[in-house]
Length: 310
Image (tube, rainbow, N blue to C red; front, side, top):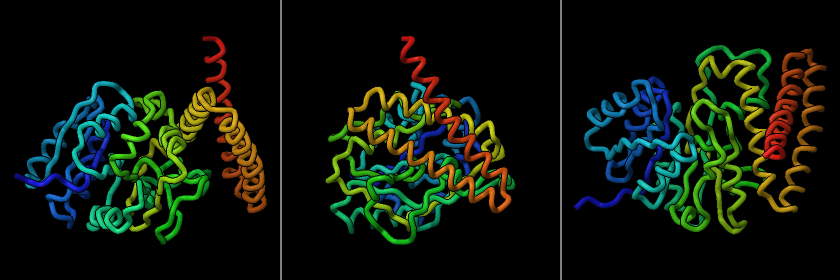
């Protein structure tokens, strides 16, 4: 009888067959023993060639445990929660469907959780890979919207104001048994841009839970031309604002105070960063930072109006 895997890789996907194909090719050519991991691909109602891509991967890598699971409830949080239920390993690793990894990627995560028994979870380094030229108006400070996440080159606990990004994060199973799963009212739904399901989840965790940054668990997040538009950035910002409003509705007075303080600090930071770009004659970057912050507040106001009307 085969031993249970040590790590379950959960990839949630929706209509990204071409990217998913490259993701699986990159991931499945790992140098990690095949009995150490399983791969669960949660197909969230894709209407493109996603099923064919998954079946090809199963045929090309017969020694690796690959499961094609269809989740009919639309939404990233629904898909992630389905992955949690269907997985069998003590470590759950969540990856986006448009990433590439190095050969030692899975081995790095396995080694981390074995060497850090006190760690409840972790997040890996993510750099952005542009498929098209980066727009002149896109500053470094907007890159996290595209998945960029880099806190340096050493393993360390996350500070209180930072947390792993959803495209490359891993947890011990008992974390979900203890604190629950992802909030299905938050997170991307189809082509919609609601967000903050990860942040809301981390806020539920006790301060005693050790969540670590793991730089050698390094991926590249691919960005296509559709994400390099001001329309995409606006949708992201509006979705973020709506998510903040939803979280504030459910938050305690102390949590609301922290959120308000955080947003005020971000407004001042936006002003100083924009002034720096303006002084450097990079006016398009300065303008976009102000627009981004304004769109967040617009999304928040829209959600609050909906809450009041209902």
